[in-house]
Amino acid sequence: MNTAAQPAASASIVSMIQITFLSNNAKVVSAAEGGNLLRISLREQGGIPFKCGGGLCGTCKCLIETGLEHTDAVKPKERKHLSEEEMKQGYRMACQTFVNGDIAVSWQPRTAAR
Ligand code: FES
Image (cartoon, rainbow, N blue to C red):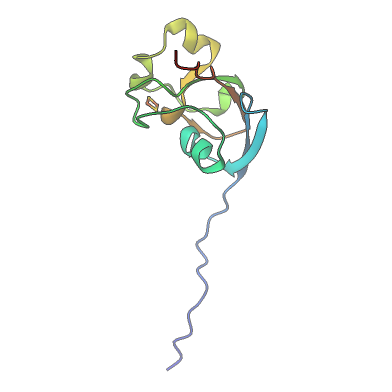
């Protein structure tokens, strides 16, 4: 019996997008469309600060400077940390944000401990 495996024909084509980490010397990385912003930052050493990764601590607050239209809807968890005004300006929580197109993101570098 011929049991040679056939290559899977179900692989979907994933588009790549570009993320620019402005507060990290404008480092540019490419990532699969639809990825989580904090996860991309961790994988590519983008440098977005974080602690919990679960929408609780607020550490990952960042500003989507370009491409806000390429991010998904603001989650209820984000509303606990962001004012209406900040959301209008483009602030998001990286761990709660998924990106489906090119964006540029900045954040407040952590101030040195006193
Ligand atoms: S890392 Fe804690 S809220 Fe995003």
